[in-house]
Image 1 (spheres, rainbow, N blue to C red):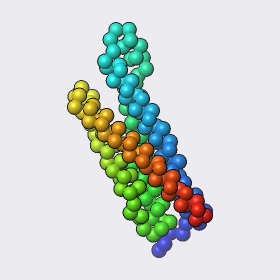
Image 2 (tube, one colour):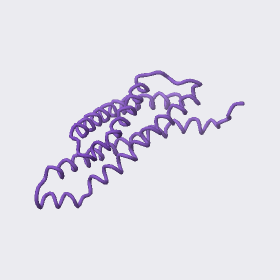
Image 3 (tube, helix red, strand yellow):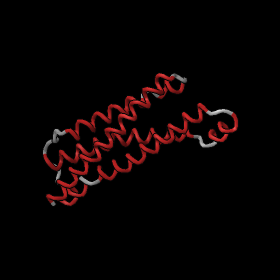
Image 4 (cartoon, one colour):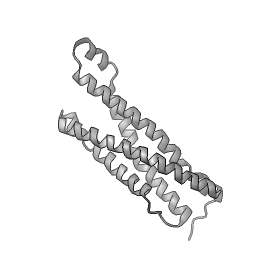
Length: 156
């Protein structure tokens, strides 16, 4: 038994992942900003620290990071499903491999949260390094993703 999916759904569903990923890239940059503000707050003193604490950067970073983690896992799985539906197979490409690597890195980074909450600097430093890696790979994904979207559009 095969699932009959209307052709228009198959075509337009291919554009959901790229749009979501652009939103997630902006969200990741915002999460980086919040993380930097947390570090500034931790290192500040006196009135400056009191003022920075009002921003609740730690809570916002944790919440944004949680949403980011969820969507950075869900969106690639969705994209692989759409690719399989449209092509009858997954297309093994650098875009796919780097995307899966990015998912692994962000999950690893998030797993450090309990250690960071206990004040472990090694966990904070690894968290920061992993997320810089995520952003770098993510930026590369944007370039290859645009190329893939251009191929899809040229076939329409």
